[in-house]
Length: 319
Image 1 (tube, one colour):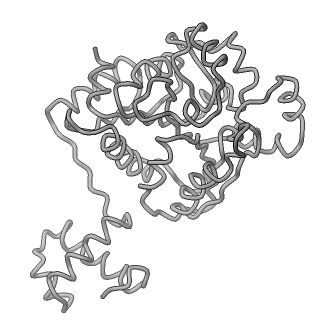
Image 2 (cartoon, rainbow, N blue to C red; image 1 turned 90 degrees about the vertical axis):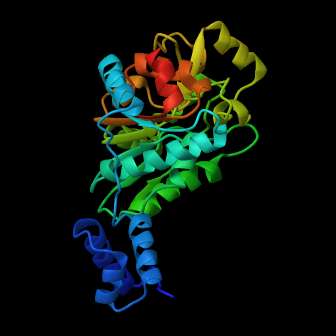
């Protein structure tokens, strides 16, 4: 059996992929050239796809996904990728398909010497499990917002997501060891003056790419901020009274994209939206129509340049 980590296997997978996808050779012909079996060639091609040697893309010249992508680009000014998902698919399956598509897109977006911001949450966790290995030089992945609350430090959850990103791209991970929300805005302001905290904030200010989803209290796949013990009942009620439709990295916003005069944002540790809007590429990943209102608000706030959504979400946005 071939060892997937053996450099010789990698080279054979590269050769097999070139013969199959570029030179249009049959698997039988490749097996003869490599002096191996057809089943081994099949395994080599599978390894080539899984390891990122081969990146298969489908660009339909017609059909609903492309028309929806063009509509979203025109209406919201984003580069959209619409993932076909059957209407009867479960929310978990829908999330997984969108996560796979986002992971493949990230393989194009992540380059050497980048600083990449990652917001923790159910969606980015799913994306992190689907990343395709692509070692790049000098890439740093920085946590966008704190993860602690009164029940847990949240460090393990957030660090697992960051570690998967750093591991897939051979980069380093920079955690943000503060709570998701401070009890008192004055504590936050004091903490933001500390040199150890300023180091992370300065990295966030220099980000080249940011990866996030939108949180929503009504999401059918529970958003971590709303289901993980981060918000008390009175805080949820206050957000509803403010007309809040969702959050990005624990910073809340209304349907029109505004986030000012929302008291909880004074205690939140996520980056101000002005910081996010200065990032050149901002990838938003969303699955499930229950998040459409929060996604509309994020788009109204101008937080995304790139968007990966399932077809049902794209249709709801288009409507």
